[in-house]
Length: 576
Image (cartoon, rainbow, N blue to C red):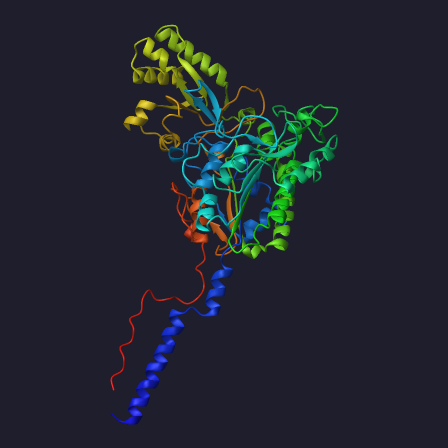
């Protein structure tokens, strides 16, 4: 071999080795691109009672920096709906946080009947913990089985990620914070303070105490809540002072609303009324800003998570309904609150480093009388009257006794002691009770029994899969009673409610914005159960343990940078 040939071969080998090193050792630019694509802050925004059509109905009145920022700059999913039968706050938040449905998590409602205690218990009831910052029964997220996305962030970073949640409602904060979260804060309408659970520590952080010392709500006492815009611009809503609206406590049904709660000084009555106004949403956003500032969220090497659940929309929506001027004004003002929050986060963290997820925990049905006036079939089912009628019907068919322990819509809990005492078979009593419920009570749609669900013998029906996904043995009842479309469980003569599997309760907005998210409108079927696994995919961590949602890959941009080979065989040494 000539000397020239040998030198050429050595030069070739050196050049090839250089190429291999360039591929195997990621260049500086590749590393920077991928690091910049990872969010420093994950911001969960849950709007309690958030109908999907609010985005389109109110869009022309929104500014550019709030809802429309997410609609224009983020992935907007137009076909997002909850797949389970019961659409209430605790269930919605548990699904958002865990990516799992009630048949896995055990969170079947805001409350359920506890046979051991022989009483209804809240989904966050926990006697092993105490309130922090107030007196009262303890609360935690212990009832939720499995982990949440916040838990997985803590596990993936060896506890370095900070996970904080806040809401006006305990369940709105606790199910988003998870078991391993740094803290969950909610507002106590008895004292006007933010409080927590001993699950997270025995004292409130200093910055929370300082925020409480400001007595934020007191500055609104006696102040009028005026419309943000002239009345003639509220074209997406009904007339003010609609007959079947339920007025704010201590006030009337029309603007302006004077915020006192009927009290002469700030007290529990006032705080309950204040929680139904848009100013409570602003208070919550200001509290969240304090959390970002004092906890330095989004300013660590590992990503942090902040969850905000806006509850005022639900409190007000129950009273005034989705077509009221009050609800429209509430969302126009929430739009401004969001714009201010986004500007603050952009200054402190950077919106380019923040993954924002916004959705609702459920929707709401229009006021039944509103539907009836337009020729639609609608009405109210009084839960107490339902229980009395069904128990009386069983008395007539069987024997006079106490047949029903509790009715916590949509679950009927039969009195198992009575069934044993009267020597009946439980499946037979369930079947009879289901038949009586369907025939004797106006507004009842589908009824399923525990025996049918256990034996997988449920009749075919449009809601049966949703009932299965909401059923958890030991917490669900012996009957699941779904009202007809247009009917609500309510003992009130005005206002409205939610909780059904129908679109007005189940379909909610879902918008995601931030690093690795491709903006656009997506019509693929999805659900809030897809949020947790999608966030996990963005963060490159494990999804929550019982997650059953899918990754919304259609809205995820491919990370930039050269592809690295899986393996490279070493070059054989040159022969001389």
